[in-house]
Image (cartoon, rainbow, N blue to C red; front, side, top):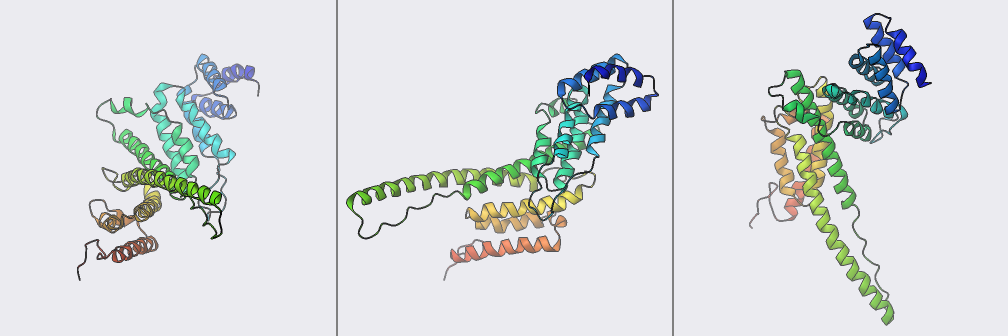
Length: 324
């Protein structure tokens, strides 16, 4: 497509009715991928007195409504496709004008919702990263918010909490599974040089193991905090009030719970694992309501594992020290 045809397209579109103007020019703009070319196209639209705010919103909605490509839902995470990247790139249309930051937030929330529904965590993170970090503050500074604006911001922070939790868990999990490997034992007939070299390897192994423990403990604390942020999300809970939010709540909250169990259990915090059951059962949070029978069974299995670990430490299943 030649950019020099854009002024002509904008001019002829301006002769249509206002509704047609938005539909036709938005459809035309869908093919423009370069951000500078997008800005130029909107400048031409302004010159022709077109409603650029309505047009950019329509462009994003047109692209976002295109069918997704999905693989086997048995996969832990779906790969990012070209159409996913196109949908993520479309958010840039709403970042050209400062006045459309709220619209950008709303459209990004909707895109993240879809990606998480399709188990496309990396795509959801890329979409979230599109929103400038200074987007929300000016909205909050306006004082009392309209309920719909408040909901958009709540959803944004819900997704932030979830994506931060997933990132923190991944960092801990990668570290936890990179424990240094102990050097092989020396044969009985090893000579002096081999023994010295082996002692050096053992010393190096102990130092690396100590560093591994410190880093793993640090990352476990971060992951635990971020995971709790999802479970204990304030004012109604994570993603509360969102359209069709119960679907993601019933998927993501049990998932986050099991990830938290993993961090706590592998860190030896068995008592906290058992105490987590109290949080899940608390009416204050109502988390138990989003668990299916199958997922509750998974939680009970984890609780049993932690209780057994406590018994092995001469404690009762709730973490209290037992006396003979």
